[in-house]
Length: 370
Image 1 (tube, rainbow, N blue to C red):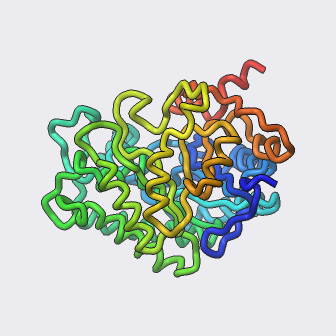
Image 2: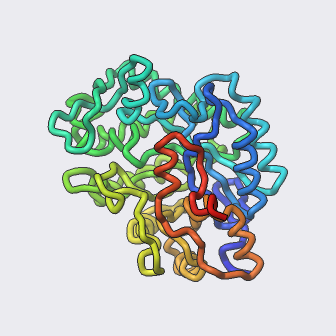
Image 3: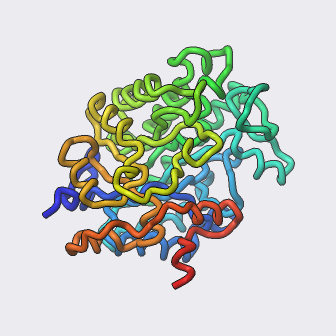
């Protein structure tokens, strides 16, 4: 059997294979952040399709970090029963499921404008080339409230039956904003030095551990570097990943930090039409893998099973993390397991993402034509 289909552990959690469904916002919750039947079908289709570990996308831990009206929430206890229905349905199909803990930081500005509220960021960047919306610099009390919200959300996730939580520390959201010297220009204990820019990550991690204990798997998605010059460098991004491992995080997924303007400066790189363009975060992931002693998940344009096998066999990654291919073909893992080694059909056109931005639910636009 291919190495990709061997069981593997994250701490004490055994996953049936090395395939991870990378956290993906789906726009399918109700307006109160609750799980819907459409979401249960989305995730049970992935479980039936053979995914080992499903990570649900961007569940906001505090209303100040919400980015969409149809986004799942972990901000209060009333959400737990619906989440239990979801985790039970996935477990019944043999898969494991984690939830991604999320705060958008200043990226909440567009959504919160409509509620006559102002978003929070690490600091005001007066010469910002990438972000023009209004927000305010977080106070120390804001930071304490958000830190507690992450811990409380992790406790709710555990109570709801999730097998793990993943802290979202990438893709231009709150934690990547605090880590990047471009967006974090504070002059207190949360800004300036590399150590200070990591302080929020550390405090959130410790609060999560207080809520879930030492044996519960806590993962993090982190940015290798920012998508433009003048932001987080890979030297600091990889050192951050090393620190996360040392603190006690149980697995790392290496992705993009702050986004640039074009798709090629983001995690949404397009035109992945040949194997040479696949695995565009490969270099970052394999370098981090050599620096840490916990499992690493490689994400970013993976489409060919032969390449995935080689990456694992060479020790460049432990898990293969997929997003867009599973939107088009939720059963592709079982197809590969059955011996069909065809490359994923996904053409990386990003129409799924563009439709999400317009307010539609997650789906492959190409599948509409069938």
